[in-house]
Structure formats: structure tokens, C-alpha cells
Image (tube, rainbow, N blue to C red; front, side, top):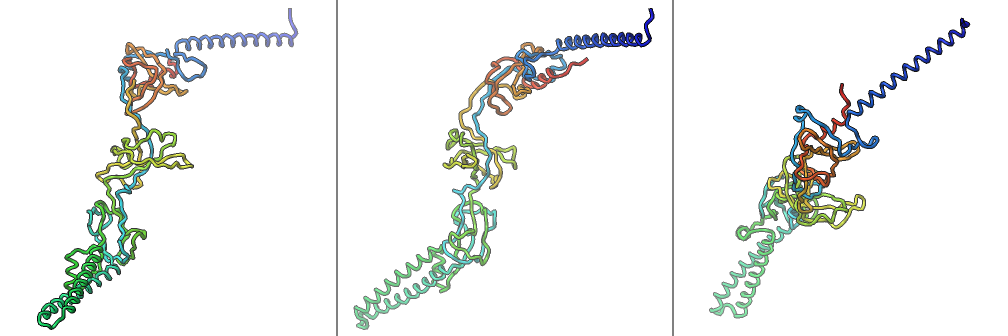
Length: 405
């Protein structure tokens, strides 16, 4: 039977659409079957998009792949209990002094340069002091009076026996000589206060000439750390800036700020290790010398001061320093090398355990302290188990790697 042309075209289109649907359905089923077969051969993870593998996730390594990892028994390590802080280097203010003169004057001459090593009582500079000039003038006058009274007393004694001088005159001459002797001794003491020696005082009396130079000496041994002294510069006791500063540079201060919540962990005398950027391979040792009583209301931090030995004077004030302060005795605990621990996408820490060095099982672990490439294992591993000590990330990446043809 023949159909009209327009009906024949509709039937032909229907058959064509049906054929396309059947073919597409068959291809979709084929893709699904292939995907299920592929996924069945890959390591599985628990939970949708969890990012953390189950404790029984495992991989098998070929002989060539074993060269990419290291395996060793789980051991133990003595972990120091320490706190880190950042601070600055400074001079030890207890061993640093500003050298002012005891009297007002103008600087005549400086005797040392900035950075020079000086000893106790070593002259640093001289000043012309009006007070010293007055004291020395009094000394010369007292010496002249004493000399005169000595002559008068000697003459009175010579004439006393010949009725040339009365007893009263002799007593007066004796009294005048004793008074002059006392004044001379006081004048010598006054000049001695300015630092003049007995020899220098005798020289001034003998020559009748004053020495206006007041010598200012270093009160301690150390290094000249600042110099603000120029000839003609007027200086006064305690009037900043000091002409010179001297510091014992073998000991430095290191000031660090720590959180007020941790202040109970710190105590005087605790050992401190310090590193600075200028000498990254060196460790300077010291101890906590002071814990300040005030808390910064803005940062809620407390300053801790440490005394650090610096016999070579390598540390300079203002240097940024990293502090490590031991707050408790070390603790021994189960540990593995840091390269034996991998952090997963969700932050979980994992390690890989094996019994035959071929089949490796991933295990979730709980970590604690870290020190010198060792990681404290609080849970998940036992001492003596064989574990990957280097290459944990390599194994974890194998679980994420796409299948290869």
C-alpha cells in the first residue's frame, strides 16, 4: 500500500530519531561500564570529598619506585620544650656608662677615638675647669703662706733665747705656722679631688704655676661606644649628650616580647639560644635575667631581658634576633623524621607503614613537637614499626595520581 508523500516523510523521520536514541543509549551504558571498571582498580577514599584517606589506604611499589623512599623503624627522640620569640640586641646598660666630668668646663683635648678599647682609669679627655683653676690658685697661695710662717717660726725660735722675741710672739708664730699647715693640707686635698697626683701637686707648688687641665678618666674597662666631645665644647655634669660612653661589650642584652598568656612559662635563669641574620650559622647562649612587670595594653605582650655572652663583640645594638628559650626539661617521645609525615588536603597528618617493604598502608597520625628534623608522634604509630622515613609525600601523591593506560 502506498502512503501519501507527506506521511512517508514523517514515518522516515520517526525511524531516524528512534535509531539515534538507541545508539546514544548504548554508548552511554558503555561509558558507565568502563568508568565503573576503572574506578574499581583505583585506591578508594572514605567520604565524599573528604580529602583524608582512610586508615587502610594502601599502595604497592615496584622495585624502581622503592628507590624514591626510605624505610626505617619508628624510634624515639628527646624533644626540648622551648618557646620562640623575636627581639633586639642592645648594650648591657648595667655595664655601660656615660662619662661626664665632675665639674663644668670646656673640652681641651680628646685622648681616645670611637670604638677604642679602654681600661679602668684610662684618660678619655681633658677640660679647662674654672673650679680646678680656683683650687690650684688656693693651693699655691696656701703653700706660700705656709713657707712664710715656717720662716717666721724659725726666726722667732732663734731670737727667743736672746730676749729678742717674747714668749707670746713665739706662741703666735707657732700658731700661725700650724694654721698655715692646715690650710695647705686642705688645699692639697681640694686639688687632689680633681684627680691631680701628689707629684703634680708638688710640681705646681714648686713652679708656682697652675695646671688648668682636668683629666676625665674611664670608670670601667670596655669599648668607646659613643663620642660627642670636640675641643671647645662646654660640658657639665649630667648634661646630655655625654662626651663619651663606655660599655663592656662582652655581654649584650637581648629584649624580646612574649604573649602575656605564656608569661608563667618563663623564669629567671632559663637558658636562651639566640640567632641573628648577620651570622645565621652561629648560636649565642645566655640566660633570662629579667622579666618586666608591666604588660603593654595594646599588644598584651611582656618584655623579657636576657644576658648573652658575646666575647668577640659580633652583636651590634639594634640587630634583629630570634630567641629560643627552654621553658621545661626535654621529654622523650615516639618520633619519625619530618619527611615521613605528609599533610593531606584537609590538614590531616599521615604516615606510611609497611611490614614487607613492598606493601604500604597509610595511617592517620597526631603530631606534636618538632625539633632538628624530628616530629613527635602523639598517636597513630608505635615504636619499632617499619615506617617510611623519607618520601611520605611521594606515596600520598600516588593516591591522587590519575590512572595511566
